[in-house]
Image (cartoon, rainbow, N blue to C red; front, side):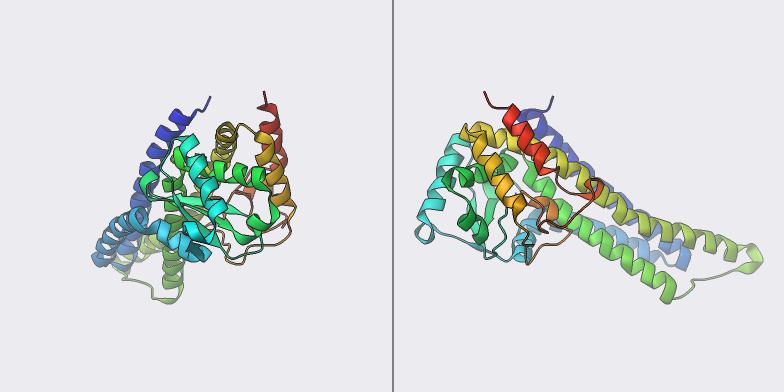
Length: 299
């Protein structure tokens, strides 16, 4: 059974595994296309690119996420009540108080990001503040603090950058394959046939790479939401607050203005409103299942 401490260790391992997989996948793609075009420079570029992206995703992915969401930092004097809620719940959770950000968006939602507890952020939308009462808002913020305590935030934030870049570079390789040239050929030695095989393998790899990373994104996201719900309920000692908040948030049909597939898994609820998404491809478990789990956890 997953606990706070086992989840922390798992998330740390998953982060390093994911970054290592990214490194391997990009080099593999670079090797395939280096063979296709007979140019070792492509492989060198792939190695440098994968190293740079791992570094970039670790140190700057949270800033990218906040920029993508259009979030603005909030100081104590700008929203004292919200600031005090976050401060009190952080003390209860036993973690350093994260920075507070607000997203100007009528759709109710929230997320946490950052590479560690010392560089964590909790962001909520203006719509969330308008829709929820205090106990419901506490439930949502406690849920996001649980993501910080469970060390979900680095893993989830790194996924945003790595998934996005894998999809981007795969698309570039596919376009280059079809429109950029045919590579070197040497029919006398059967080189032409070998290059065709390598090209097919390269295309398959370029197509499967973003699919594989999306599957990883979905699998990691769903499991962490149930544990964050449970951990958040323990912080507030009032699971009804979070359950009611989830019900209100899920009933809203407004999609978030800056939502994207790359960042969808970060939010407490599906940021695309009540748009029907197959359970198989949803980044979040069904709200009904989450509420049921919360109610079963009541003493």
